[in-house]
Amino acid sequence: MMSQHDYLYIQPKRIGLSSVRLGGHYTVASVELGNTTTKCIIVTTNLKTGEMAELAKEVRMTRDVRPPVEEEETFGRTLIGIPLTRASVAEMVASILNAVMTRLQMRIETDLHFVVRSTGVTAGFSSPEEVDHMVRALADGCLLAGIPPRLMTAALSTEGIPESVRAYSWLDRVRFDGAIASCMPPSRPHIVANEMEGELVTAGIKGAARSKGIDFRNPVMTLDFGTTLAGRITDDSHPYAKTIGSFAGIAGAIPDAIARGSGAVDPQRGCALDLNTSRTRHSVRVEEEWVEMAHRLICVKRIRGGSHFGSVPVDPGAADEAGVCLFGVDVGENCSRMDELERLGHLIAESAGIEYVSPAIDHIQARLVQRLVELAENEGLISRETALGFTGRAITTGGKPQMVAKSLRRIEGSLWSDIRPLIFVDDGLAMGAAMAARCMNSMGIREHPVGGRRGDSCIMGARIRLQRERCEQNIDSHHRKDGTERDLPTGS
Picture (spheres, rainbow, N blue to C red):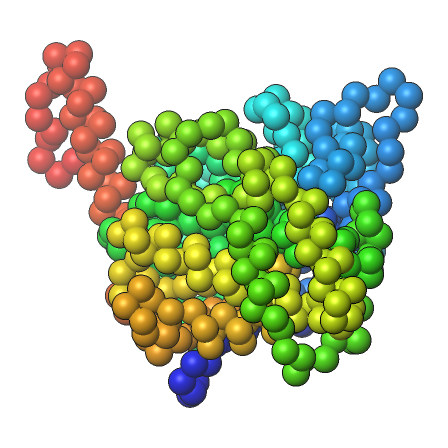
């Protein structure tokens, strides 16, 4: 039982490959290339209980990708300017995948069921063509590591599901129709460049919470505080929720700038992860003026125009057409005042000491959460039923979860944690990759539902009926167009 003002911090449990080989597990590799870190995380799901666990994780700094060689084309850069080529990205992805699988002594043909690739590095991109290069580079890396193409695409029928888990698939009764964890993506694509991240972390937080016996289903608001910001807000539509809010801009880039200015990390390539938090005194008193100075620089607003926000490509027009409120975080106009955040880091370190930098960052990030939630609530997207979930290094580290749980308030003044616990999840994107792979291959667990509304039963039956009705409507529409038949025969 959770006490008042408490929160749930979920770290996936670790199990060994020998346990997975006993059967009944669906195992997915998540390959994530971000602005700051590149990860390969192997996640497995017990298809009887719905519990998720990590088998292994490898994390590297994206800044360590090899530089371009002669005649290689640079197709994009990270937020701190690290150049990326198709070959260099592919090599890094292959190396990290091979490292994890070798350490696990994993057999691709029998132990691995799916591979999901994602990237948040698109914040440094300027065109859809550059994003396409990144997608291809990630696929190249997986192929270079020996991953067969069939493990990167959804099966068309249960015949395409590995025999060891085929009995757990509903694919012959209900097909994948685009909904991940019962949330439909926006009707217009490319609202934000990292829309897939928002989709995955939402599903991942749902799945991780279910693993701990927490019903975290629609309606929800999720936020991923990686270097860039991602996340979404869903409504309570049934059986599939609609995406009614989406997030873009920067998140972890804010503490990264403060850390670089403090002098405690590399001034060009450093990030908040490099801070020596063992020197931090958690009882230090953070000056409110530091927090105010940071937030005078930070812009949090609904995005209504422009092609980029916080360096992230966005399409506000497409968002409006899809009925999605697009929210963003920036520092100046497209990160133009990041140097002032660096000066704030220098001020904190010089006036109080290096050990004050991390606590100050915790306070600044907690205030950022408050502003984002208030903005969404003021736009009418948050109800008393909405559950809040968070993931990403810039909100799950240090004292941030405790601070958010004790300070986050609704507009009318009550604490959010008085209503229901706030959920913080480590590796939410990897958990979401495992959920997405299950959804694409209809690996539903009726006794432990992740889709639908909180408190409701499994939506599998409703999905089957919905798809049957749509099929009948399509047949009827076809008959009406060609004039051959106006009504379906009885029993069709």
